[in-house]
Length: 280
Ligand SMILES: [Zn+2]
Image (cartoon, rainbow, N blue to C red; front, side, top):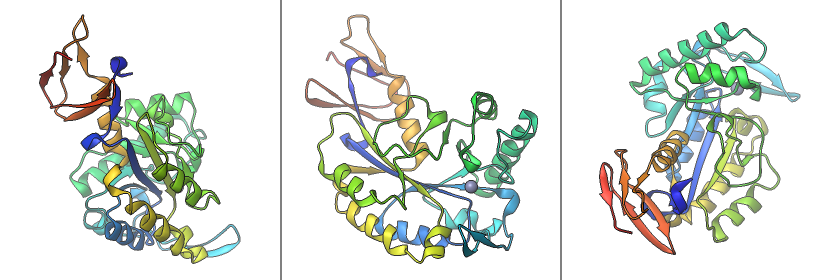
């Protein structure tokens, strides 16, 4: 990637932090307000077929209010964040025929686009289940990235955005250790801390402090970290991969509309959208 150039993120930052929270339960209200207080940005993966559903469920042996948010609050509640698809009704996509899976994704996209006025291009796999056929179906449905539930405890960008493995779940015992490593250690490549979970888990275990402590800690490093939604990161990386370079390598062309930052021989550069840059 990058023709020998090292990609940097927006404003020349080397690190990005993003959140990914699933299912759209009423506890998202508190999570979003905490994220807004600390200037965090994230992605909320919603099942539009289940909006407004009241539900008490026993999850991991604990009685949990699993009620979903109302359709009417989607636009205002998640303003400034990304709304992404999690299918209409939360089926496991490896367990149903592809045409039914496609209907689950397209109907959800359609509903969420109607509610937000935005294009919905992101996805998280219900139950974390996927295979090659599911990935192909998502692609055909206009989905550009999909999050799994396989924590890597690393900060690397994925090879394939349809298998985007998160860094960790917020319940990882290593959460703060990883946060410290991410914030303090110098990185050479662009790195992403990708945190995922469900907001009902904080209510269930009464441990909102865990996420507030995390946000408080990382917000101390805001000057070095790009706080972005999942889709913003994907769009940026795709635009960078799409940079063109002259035969002798000295001139770059950025066909995207995005300003891009990169490093070459220890020096950082900026190339604006639809502009040529060089000679390097
Ligand atoms: Zn889910």
